[in-house]
Length: 131
Image 1 (spheres, one colour):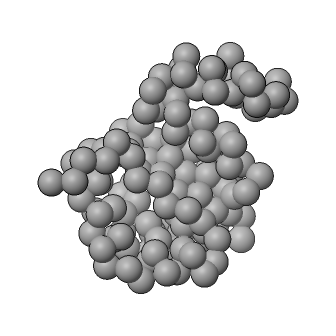
Image 2: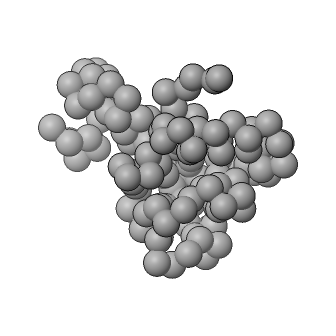
C-alpha cells in the first residue's frame, strides 16, 4: 500500500488538465480519500481535478475565482484557504494564496508550533498566519 501523509494537487492550466486525465493520479487521490488521509488542491485543481472526478464529497472548498462557477455553490467559500477537517481536504485560490496554503499544510501535518516556526522567518504580513 502507498503511505502518503498528504497528496497535493498543483493548479494552473494545462497542468490541472494533465493531472485530471492521468488515471494513476486519480487512483492515488481516490485511495488517499478512501483512507481518510489529507488531500489538498490549489488554483484550478479543486474544480478541474477533484470536482471533475467526484473527489470533493460535500466538503467546504474554494478555488481560483475563474473556476468557482464550476463548483457547487452550497460548498463554495470565497476564503483564501479552506480547510475541511472532516474530509481531510485543504483548498486554496491561487498563486497569491500559495504561502498561506503551504503553511496550512504544515499546520495540519505537523502542528501549530511548526507552522509558526516556518512562518516567522518568512517576514509575512501580520495577518498572513494566525499567532
